[in-house]
Length: 360
Ligand code: GLA
Image 1 (cartoon, rainbow, N blue to C red):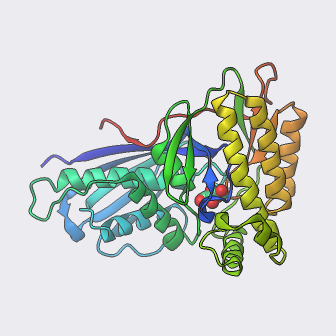
Image 2: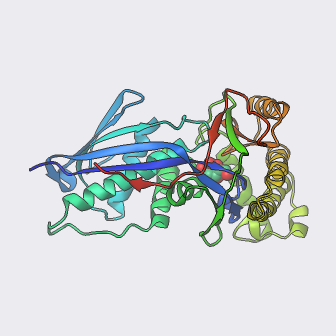
Image 3: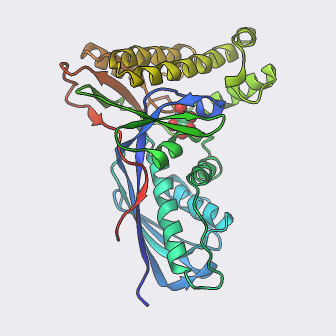
């Protein structure tokens, strides 16, 4: 029998503004970028059900992994994502089958552009498609309609339980719902997603690598999340975004600082949406600078390497610059007016399509 095949692409993301708000029931404004991860999958040896084996090959790293569907056990690095996605898809009742996976991509790892969400989402789409093709007509086969919010939650469980990073849903939703020339206003209290046109009209958004790699599982990311949870407990609210400015001002340090960042960042997202609607990119620059200051001084997740990279973009004439992603390293986002050339070692980013299946 000829093997079944599937292929999926999922992009990384840049968060224009709204950092550390996702797990606080707040607002963010990310967009999907052109860079991403592609997963090609094909069924092997006609194995079906849990008898099958997954053989995964990470092309860029020249590394491989092999494990049985019956018992994906924990692993490190990229293997944790593959094993986690397979296990979580199985747990959610998706039909799985023995498969060979080939993974390739162009999102730099640990740079704050969400290479991990791109990997999880591409794996999910490719494996779910392969499972539904190969189970067609089989008695145990069933088609599970893939709700993209459910895929995002499944991928977040992989991060939380298989990788040990207690991240929110920002990266996965951006990768799954992105669209060309569009930023997504995401309200994490309701998971409502509103597309907002991102018309650059000659302005440029660029990424500068701080040179410092980070891993959420081992950086201060989980610690910040715990601080936010403690602040919620003291305030008696389910999420920090529900805290009133008055109650937040009474919190003990450093919880007051963390909560003030979240309330201020939500406000900046609202202002950024209004600015995009009037194509006022200069105001976006001012908001990027304010967001960075808040992440540095209130959320306290900057590092000397990040500060040096921000300073470099500003001295090159950026209209605004800020760290993106979880912090403690990674990338800096800079906005440049049409007549100001960005430094040559930056990477220009534009809003591109969200995750999708490709022809095999
Ligand atoms: C990382 C996490 C996201 C989000 C950001 C900070 O990218 O994966 O869930 O918390 O940090 O905004």
